[in-house]
Length: 318
Image (tube, rainbow, N blue to C red; front, side, top):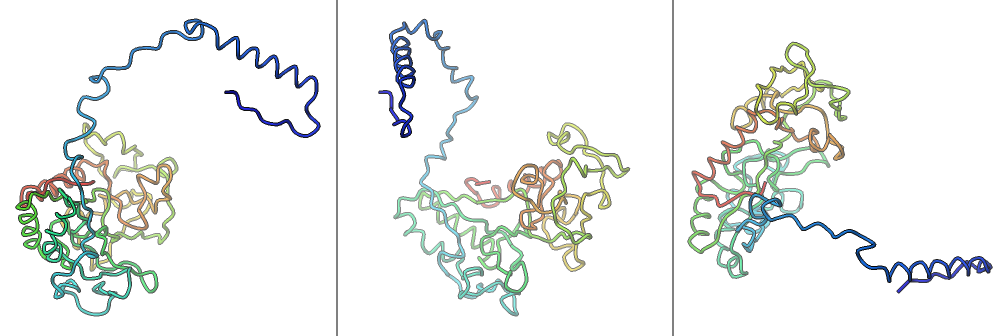
């Protein structure tokens, strides 16, 4: 069917009727032409081997996942609500009256609810990040807590607000005993906001206008080294677009220790979430790891390989 739209008032002229008649006639003629006259035979679809060297869907995608934010699920041990810290909520991050702060949920509470979770038809639990976080970021009314797990300072231990590494081991063992897998939501591109800039300015500085410089002041493109085939150039704090500085009290805050080196971060200012800055900028100040550096890639691999080895994790959401 050919749709018709009414002509504007006063515009339906004899010329318009002739044009319409010619158009309909042309369409009719086209419709009765042999298919071969209108288009060549389409090419055969590509073979599966050319489409993918491995299956498009992994077996694990068939799991029935239950996503859980441990802080908001169940409180199995009120003694860890403040993460072993003292002082006000701006120090320990716990305030059940404010949704921007820790509410008290933990790994023991999650373990106690495994039968309920399995009863929903769950075959795999997917947990929000549970590693040790900077408990609070921001000041005054802008302050909030790391209950979501995305402000990591120590990639080797469970955040004390959620319990201990032993609590995690117990959770995984009991989940496996009930036939459920356990997956971690993990972070590989940033840490907590610890690195500051000497300039106290945070607008993003592009690579085109402010290229990276070697220790000797020679410009280079870091993406040329991202595949690890060439040795990454030597750099120091004075060669970055922004000059990174770390408060004295936090110089050894991060674990593993290589994360405390400011040269492991992009140091270009805050992301605008568009273009190049989406890959190189700090997400609202979070220290953006220089993932083009082989040391960063190798370091992250070792972190998560250790969790698999020590805790029998079934997989990660990266």
